Length: 286
Ligand code: ATP
Image: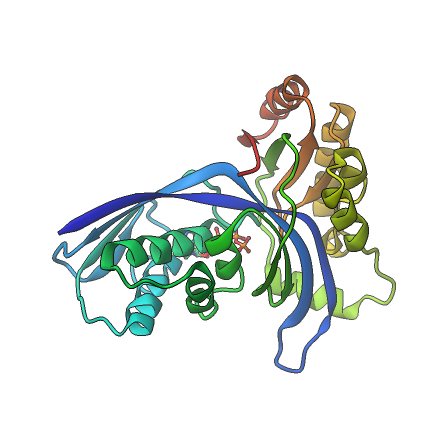
């Protein structure tokens, strides 16, 4: 049996835009993504008898191929032309579930990276990202990580200049959001608020956190049901008042992120939000 433990970082969206609906039922996306230091820990025990399964200690997470980590293992085995039968995947969950922070996709990406090492398959990071495409739209990004522009369904990735040193506060309110419902609502809307993605990329290129903060925006914020929208706006306002350079919802929510250049302000903002919200995290870009 061979074992390996990997970090699976959460992802946040500095911007999220939808360019249009596609004939295949997906939407054409344009997103500036960033991985952060909030991580699940994924341990692989290859050869551990019992088939391919995922254990997380969370009763509501699937253990079979409905778990993205198992789906990734199956996709990897097929792509590598291997025939091993036994893999125990142990996931220590730290990333909130259904939060817009790609926890499941990041677990899947960690499995791909880990199996590549354990089996010596020798896929390049780009090849591994391609194996992840069938597992989920965010998996290719999670394989590569860092700061990147994601286009298409999220699988067309362009690395961007890393963020200058900064701090990112995450706050997840208690409600959950249906991603398909948000896309349906977006399809219906005529007038849409949109992020300045080019401006955000130029700000990154210049290492200008203030300019980047001003351009953080997620189009899904404009199509939320009104009560949820009010709560997201409330968290954004609290972050900005606490000194964030910008704030936006991540992915299809409901996690909100605030970008800070000063750690003391970020810490104070996180402490303040913890008085109201159970899931608040102070992170850095990774
Ligand atoms: P994204 O930002 O990519 O939209 P998310 O943060 O909204 O992701 P996840 O927590 O990644 O959502 O996934 C939530 C759904 O995926 C749940 O229905 C959960 O049962 C299922 N799932 C499958 N595998 C995992 C996993 N390893 N971790 C978390 N959720 C998983």
